[in-house]
Length: 289
Length: 289
Image (cartoon, rainbow over the protein chains, first blue to last red):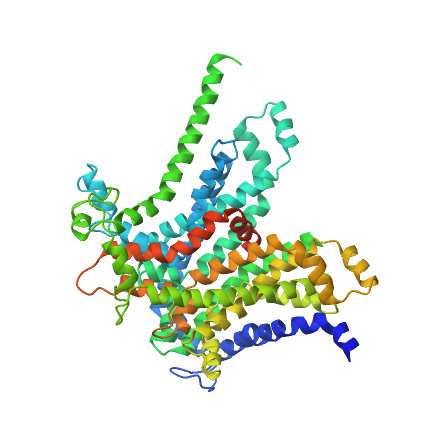
């Protein structure tokens, strides 16, 4: 008996986690998937109606706005955070005196919750007393900044706050990558008379490929899951102009008692993540083998 | 090297320093704005601007944010919710870290048929957007009688934190030579003995990284907090969001900012004292994003 226990201890140790994983991850995904095929509204019920909820979802103008916003957010957030993060990392990699202090400053927003970030930027960007007033006081009379309350522009406020929060992290990823570059390589290139710009463009950047890759995956993941930031900064408003899919899902599931549509939107989000993730994991695993 | 060239290099370095300091300023500005705003009274906020220093600093906003600001229908400030977060974070961090250590050890050094697959399946769970498990988890908590309780939130954070803590420990333990385990086994040491006497003493850094990561994640969580808590059990992020969106008798930006700093303080302090480990966690945990 004791022997059996000892022999199977690794499996016994892993059992609770395995059960939790099967039930609370995969089981729940299946549950939500099935629910999205029913006509459930306030309570789950199991009358299957095929893809009706998905049809209703795609016809819903609010979902359209949320998906459009996600693409705007995704593209700007990723491109700007990557460019900014990379440039700052390259500059910081030039044997800077106070590197440690600067790195600490660039990265601290990552320790803060999106709710705090949203609250802070809501105040900074507010039309009456925020950045608009600051600019007026500094002599730019007539300067207007009302993005936070403008239908078409509110989503860009979310982009700004998200970049402020995450670009330092991208910088840290690139800096780690740059530190991994073989010194002899750069020395050899310099001996051959390559300029700094050419050195970075032709030799170092191509070496950063894996960093680009993982940064993009992480940022995409953050963007698709972004819920808190929108909730705190704009509340999805004005109206629902700055909703993202995660906010749509929350509103329909918990405030509007449309859990069928909510489930369908959650499944679409999952597929979105998988579409980015599967190629990534595939290439990661292949590299390791 | 001629004079002109030297000048050029110095100019280049000056430009790099300028850009780095400029961005340090940009990253710090919101924190500065939050802090100074929290020390002003409403009159001063109206008449001054974002960057102006407080003329007559007052702790009014801090006292109110902590003890008497309204967060919805209750007006008890953030204090009770701060302690809710503490009561959620500590057990959740400890349990998920211990489970992760055991899991990681078993998966790294006691491989059995299917253990790699199990790890893959668990890893995959790190990436799912939580929207797809929100509703069934709410049902499960309801069935267990844990809806709207601190215990329920602890359970949720443990379940969805394990994948991550396991990944941390597994990847760390893989680096410890298997020969050590083999030799100990030949000497008749058991699963637990080897863990206790060989692995635990080597594990301090990974414990620090994991604890910091989990602490930050759980303290900053909003989604689980807003879905699974009831009145009286909300974590601080939810209370902060409620506080900002409750305006009884006019908007008090100073109170909002003091509240936001209170909510951010614990993770900021951890970041400042253990930044190195925080960054390591970020890059190792990058997969989760």
